[in-house]
Figure 1 (cartoon, helix red, strand yellow):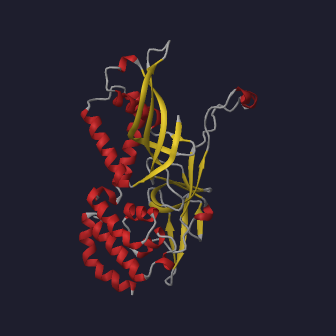
Figure 2: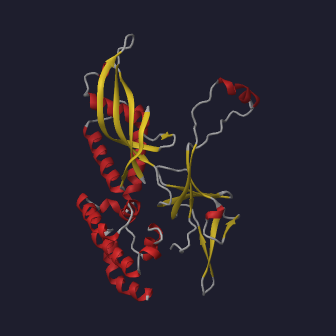
Figure 3: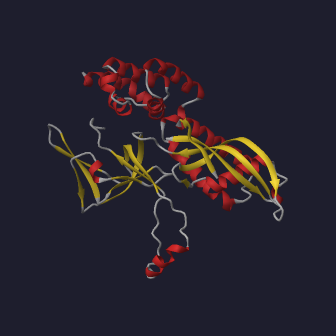
Length: 199
Length: 146
């Protein structure tokens, strides 16, 4: 579920923090920058693991702060393909079941990947798995708050960095739309459909 | 910022759990947050991740159990990813093993799956309450499988 990612970055420490230990200030700055953020094609950053190398700190003319190049390792949430995970059902809709892990919410099970046969109950807005045994058909409701085991099928990274002024023409035509479309930077498409029936 | 290696190492849930609890301890000891505005993200992610991991079996693990587990697993010829999944999930049924191990029908015989289950449940500590319930049920389960 979690991987260690080696990264380098230049950290800026303002002068009023010079009295603190350099390692602490740098750890704090890195966590401030990366914790709970998604890095494109890497995953959701959790926290700093350790600092492997600190290069010399420089002070540039015009800026009193010190700049240090740091090599560090960060704990990142990045499940590998076909990994089995357990999550909680957050909501159900026509386009599938939305599952959450608490710290990561953008997990979706598309209808085709639900254990077949499954149907969407409009009245209760939940997906139902019709499980047939010798005794008869059992309806297993996928209720909100229920734990569900799934396998990771696919992941999508979306670059959500702000676009430049060249797209200003496109945005003025949508002047009536005040709410900007928020795209999840990192989504997981998962399945519960496995050859062996999961209990 | 530059990413040097996006897959330097795999971490087990237990290692992340240890790291986060140590970090939480450190931050508590160093007094109240000096700049809480910047630390809010870290607080949120730490809290949520800790909450999630605490519900998994790894809260009962220790470095020694993980080491023993890996040493015992050497004989079973499983890939790193499969061993990691077994460590994180602590499967108790054969179905769970078949999910986590690829092509388990071809690679493992039924006895091997049984011995794998035995190793997992004996070395990795589970929920103490459940273990008390499990022991009288163990004979019932065996009967059902046959």
